[in-house]
Each structure stands twice: as structure tokens, then as C-alpha cells.
Length: 168
Image 1 (cartoon, rainbow, N blue to C red):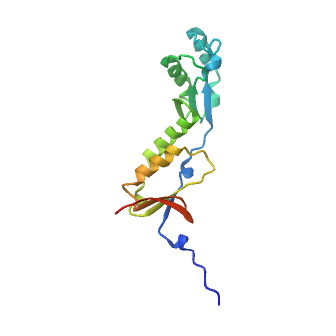
Image 2: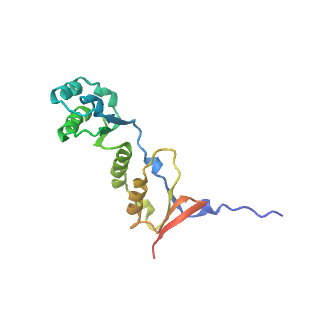
Image 3: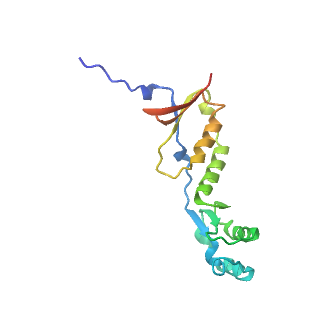
């Protein structure tokens, strides 16, 4: 007689939190202004303003945009501010920095506004593997947010998790 196999993971009170579920749709764009600078280094205000005025900003509809300059040019703050005035009607989020910084800020906004009362006094596993580019900082932020709420926090998959925290 064979013994019945019991799925203890399915029967546990373990709650899975998957950051990938909160990944917002929208293209991520790295907008490099180096091509708008004279020889990639000198910002000529009149030319820069003209390029901004004539650029097709509608192409950024629903996008998340990281403004950057990949050369060692000294870019005045107003230049990024000017681009923001054009991007703002179309882009979901705009910042100066890298795509990784952009993802972190996107997740910061999302995690800050999450209602997590459903995890109160429960063991929570933060799912580790994702197919989408969830930034490492998002895992830190959700851990911080769950600490005062969850009974315990683990990382990984239910079948092979790493314990991180257990309330005494």
C-alpha cells in the first residue's frame, strides 16, 4: 500500500509576495542628451532649446524615462528640467539617472503605497526569481515594509527558502 503524498507547502499558511506582480507596464527609455551637445560636451542653450522644441515627445507616451548624459559634460540642472517640461505630458515617470535607478524609484513609489494588512502575523515568503527586471533595492524596500507586519519573512521559493526574520 502506497502512502499518500501530502503537499505541505499548499497546506501551509505561508503567504507568497511576488514583486514581479507589481511591475508596471510601459517602456523604459534611457534618454541620453550627449547627441544634443556640441561635440558631445558643450551645451549651447539656443541649439538645445531648439532641439527640445522640435523633438517628437509623443513617442514617450506611457514610458518611464531616465535622463542622462553619457559623456563627462557638465550639464546645468535647467537642461534636465526643460526636457521634463516636454516629457511630463507623456511619460509616467522621469528622473535623472540610470535605468536601474529608474526601476528603483518606480518600485519605491509602488511599495510606499502598498496596503499589506493581509500579511499581518503571517509567515511571508518574498519570491526570489523573476522574469522582469525587479531591482535589488525593491527587495530591500519590501522587506523593510513587511518587518513590522509579518510573523516571519523568507526569501526564495516555498520548496527552498532562506529564512530572514522571525518575530519573537
